[in-house]
Image (cartoon, rainbow, N blue to C red; front, side):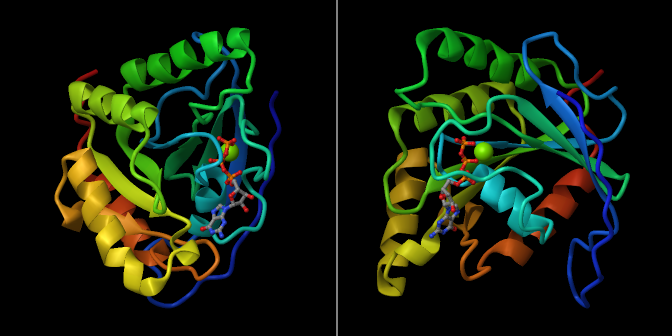
Length: 217
Ligand code: GTP
Ligand code: MG
């Protein structure tokens, strides 16, 4: 499916990522299928189904419904590409680990996601989302290992932080950092409800995008 949509967002002072234009470029439905012509740097958002990838993308670009959000897991089934400011692409990956999706679908998703991550020459980094309320799942750990094996720069975001009691957050950050084998300073707690973490993530993304591609063409 391909659709094009443009819009202009008002500027906010001090915003590390000011959105001037946004365009949905289309979805990649199968390995080797249509994708935007490589050119602009890309950042991909990965995580289990329902963890909040599409919501986080909307919060990042301050739009209600650029990426489709759903209470039903398994909503995003294609790899969706969004052009930001004509400068870089945000890449919304389908969620993994959703048991009720048919076996055939799961069999196509894995090669789709893996193929994209293995072959995208312009990929600058991956934002890996983990639900702040739970320890990383087995699928999360498999994905983190895969990202480490690729040596792709990875940011870790803890979603739905508003669902925790504030006093429980430090302990959750510590537990997830331990389970993921990373330093606590590498985790960004995030909430689309309170807006927490949005600017921190935007800043980290801008830095990531300024780095040269880690993968040689
Ligand atoms: P798939 O496309 O199925 O892989 O899911 P996804 O990871 O894109 O999740 P999505 O953004 O569609 O969000 C799933 C559900 O979680 C929706 O009901 C969202 O409203 C809710 N949600 C997402 N982020 C937050 C958050 O920060 N706080 C709260 N309270 N709810 C959230
Ligand atoms: Mg989604």
